[in-house]
Length: 121
Image (cartoon, rainbow, N blue to C red; front, side):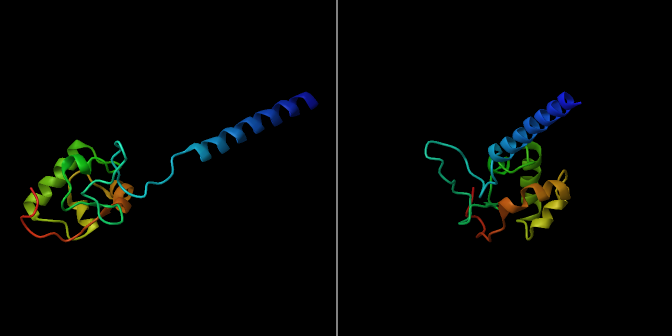
């Protein structure tokens, strides 16, 4: 009986150590959408606080958001061209393929800054 208890305790210690390592080695939250590069510069499409302006971002920039791939990025651009800029974050729910779960994945990384018409590409 003592030997079984010792094996159980060792297994429990190994699992606990693995869990602690996973917690400490997991990547932390991102402060904003960043593009890695030589000096890991912030790119020009970000607001002052590091969030992505969805009214001016390109498809490639939109793909940096969690849960957004090329198809969703294209649909966001298509929606923007059809209806103009987004007036609120939850208007993104009108884009086909973006549900509440997807929006919640990236809502902290976006902003809606007003832009002058015809200043972009």
